[in-house]
Image (cartoon, rainbow, N blue to C red; front, top):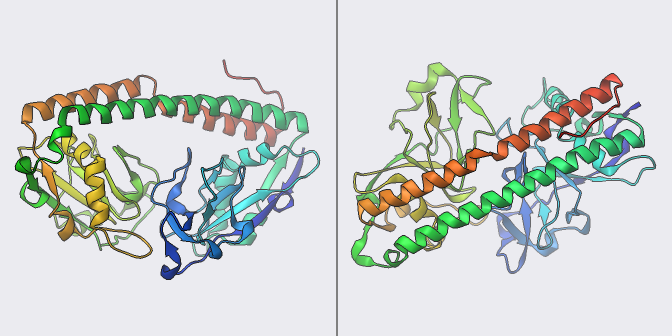
Length: 399
């Protein structure tokens, strides 16, 4: 086993720099991945920006197997996050706040072993420590070049990769199952309420059936521990993800939360980056606050929160959102336009029936949750690198 620098095995690629005037539509441009597209469980391809093709150099077009790293962000939790690009339906690139690492052909090196390194605790610890005493929201090229990696024999590399390959297959299978359940809920919504989507008689504006709690424009002081801060980065469609985890000082809570207190059962709506995501706030035992690019929507007694969540995620309503959005580089919607959009109010009993159906589907998701596979993968990444560091090379596959 030898200790090497990562620069011996990878080439760094700079992201695409572009101006608002370089942004175009999906028909005429190349999609650009940004920091919010990099997730622990892989890339997500929501809220893509498209730039003119001439702005993207040939080397900046991602290839399957490239590692994309967030190197600059206003969020400390995002800086250093890495994900492997596995392919996309069209040519795609990445923005200037990211870098891509392309693995070189090196004798005796399994490229997938290098990729595993960027999921390891060893990588995260080194990236975190490299920013101490510097601008903690940026990673320099030399910080990446100087990452230490332990290289075992080719046989050990292959054994480590095989373990992770099998676990990744389990994760992909579980993702497909969850996707099918999501489609089932969407179909059920259309079956029950599709005729109301275009029924003007049943529609009222959001302003007349909900209350908005809007903390946009306020950027609170953050700290390593304290009261949880939920931002647009945490909101996915129909799901609240607590990564990246950000916090505010507990003593600042009352001073910040002066416009109202979001609670479990209220709806979170992302106003930009990404635009139009909605989810119901789950049961939370701890206090929390809501921050950037989010509006909390509190429905009145006529509307079930889950029903409104799925109404707002329907193609019909999403089209209304985008038609009323503005912005050249990043599309967003102002609250005064959002509150004028109309929603259909179905019979409350039918809303409640649909909500119960959604809850039952959600229960089936947690019978064998995807998080178990992620835990196992992360656990084995830890074990692999611990064994390599200590010189232990006997791996066994999980049963």
